[in-house]
Image 1: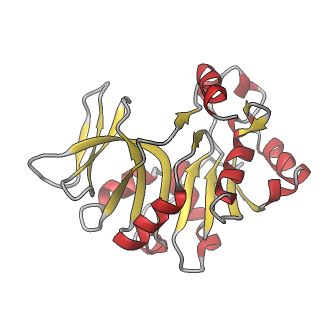
Image 2: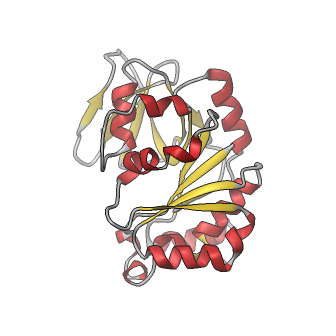
Amino acid sequence: MKAMILAAGLGTRLKPFTDKYPKALAIVNGKSLLQRNIEYLQDFGITEVIVNVHHFADKITRAIKKNKGFGSTIVISDETQEILETGGAIKKASWFFKDNEPFVLMNVDVLTNMDMELMIKHHIKQKPLATLAVTTRKTSRYFLFDELDNLCGWKNEKTNEQKMSKEIIGHTQKAFSGIHVISPDIFSLIKHEGKFSIIDVYLELSKTHAISAFDHSTSKFVDVGQPESIVQAEKMFK
């Protein structure tokens, strides 16, 4: 199995660090977020990884070369001309996943000890188009799932904006962890071009395809998006 780590973002929430460095190179107890997630994937036998780059792309590329991929085979997906967001990023990198196997997609700025093997087994057993790692933690934006734990909508708590892909009587809301297991079948279904969010793709495709939840609420998890979350991450991940 292969993976993609999304590392192209501007990391505005991590300013002032990201005025001079990419968020992928933010340090937690002596290791960058990028190194930690490459090594996290290695724990589950995933050693072929493509990393997209945009903000301070050269610094990420140099770090990977200097450290010999941190023990993995790393390929760069260059988005220096234009950042493509999550959907555009995986479409640009689709050539990397031509082996017709599911692949892992994850944000570089999340840290977890979730059992990825269990998530992959869940995906293989259920056979959805994509499986999304979620928890019951509080957040400002939620995915909404039906009684079968399939995606049916999205909600922004701050703005009260809600998008429903299915009309159902009840739903549960869960916080997305920025980790996906995706079937390569998705590439033939993506009609968007250029810069677009994978979330919009999921909401559209969930009308006709299963997009499944994998709840890992019992795992450690931190979104390292703000300076104070670095402190939190250093307490949780040694």
